[in-house]
Image (cartoon, rainbow, N blue to C red; front, side, top):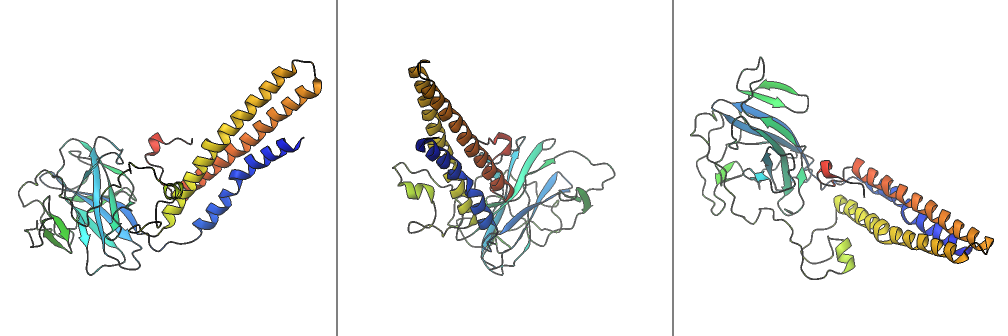
Length: 334
């Protein structure tokens, strides 16, 4: 085997094989900045009134944060333009863990998919999500007395217990247990939480006017971005948040995507073309030339197989330790 083929095998195999060890080492480090958001379930009340139930924990620094729910009718793809409930904003008297609720207006005899969402008020671009679950409105569960609460964790129902927080009417926001309009601070009239069926039928949610604490989707820059800033999209310019654990996972994913798709695959294609051209040129006149071409071909296949295997292993590890690739129904490995 000549020196060129040895270098090719070493390059293809070592380019990706070291990354799983790095991922395991990084994942072992706890990140106290991440709050855990869970979708607890839903409650069914009289008069076709429904309540989404969520919870939060791990706010060890008791930092101000905001929670709400994303939902969509007849579609589980909540990554694509979902509807949103009112914002539940906590600025004072923050606890490390607790529950939150909201009272959206839903059409009867329909299926809704929803999930709890949360973010720290000082970093609205970084959101944390609970699991996606569904609610079939108008469906009466056997031997269940309304009102009731359905818990998605153990798929059981319990008696409905009114939450301590008030329910606000869109486009209001619940700020420290007080309903306020997004553009003003005076308290608004909340819906009494002890009897959610007594108020008038909830109005159709309308888009909330963005406030300083309302998360905004990061826009795609029109100008060309330096390669370092394109790979590391945190902590490298004024106003960006320091890099966290999720940012490290995103960086690893970008690196292996770049290494495999931009470097390994084109390089392997070039080596395949080189081996084929060498085989054609030899034309059977030189046995040594044909042998060398076959050796290049086999070495390239071996290196490409090792690189592809490493790529898939790293993708699997990222998925296991919690990296969100998006809607798994449309998830592809490559």
